[in-house]
Length: 107
Length: 403
Image: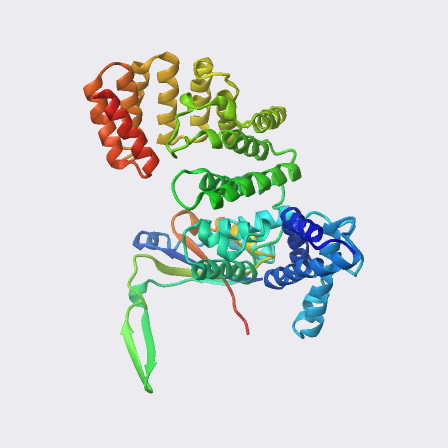
């Protein structure tokens, strides 16, 4: 099964932005688990887009002003949720932020 | 031909004993919870008519499994999307030697990725065979709410890839406590004197005991599973003596011990003794040891309080909560005198705000020290916080006695 790991954290997580997760990424790639992934620039660099009645509307900032923001993502392929939990639990960001595991929907 | 009443009894017995196992097997074969549930229900409905014509089969569980599996195969054949699932189903044969899948079902129902209320509901629906309406009644929510909760949980199991398996050995230590917690919650929910009608509560406790028996039977090397079963049996043995004819609470020390279920006590003690041989103690075993101390004392005055106090010390290592600290204070108060118990209550107020048993315990210790005015004040404090009517009546009686 395919899962998206959404790496979330509050403002303090920004301090870890340049940490990388090389050891984890290398190991998961070697295991055939990691498909893709990247860190994201901070929410202050975000632009939000909607189209309503044919008109494209832009907003400066993220789609929701919450304390926790998405700071990165990883696309993984696992046997089941238990393996995805094990993989996410070993991601370095799990030690300071929160990781949301979402099953990927492909029609 | 077999009499209708006899068949009815056989089907009821099979439902009680086999539902969980038959459903677990069919889920294991099809991987589809909704389909499996419908097919198992259907198999029980068929049993009513077939058994009347052909007689009750020698092994009702095997008959039901075979029938439910055939039904699932038929349904999947007719369904194009079912073709993929069909490949996973083992070739048809009779179900004489189906493996016991209930353990897989238990671990999946109690998976930590599901919310606690969903785990409890799913366990009752799939393993115990309670209807959605019955579960809703037991948890004081509408049938619609409970139905949505169950549907959502089953959908998450399917869509989020919650595995249908017993966790591998390295995951078992972290996953087994979750299963035990669900069963214990079921039991205490049924045992508590607070909410819901008495009959439903008794059913919940009985189901919890039954499932704990299945679990410890399937995991004979896990002494905490046996510890939980022993704990339930030893508590349940005292159920009928806890309330008097008027529905008032009877304290442990005042209970008529001849009304305790001696067979349940004996079984609980035996199960606990067997668990001890594994030499891996845990919180459920220690709590069962405490319950056994109470249950085997012939009269209240013969209770081995020093041993109980020592057991609470051990329990506090596994479960360092203020409620355990409170119970330890009670035991020390009995073993070494109320003054020592009272000293141990210091500092618990901040950790147990609004918990009526803290002032009630303090009141009892003060009463035994002869400090009547302080005791009455503490009883009044407890009275204002007590959540159930029998407890309020008990505290009111105490206040009246003192004054």
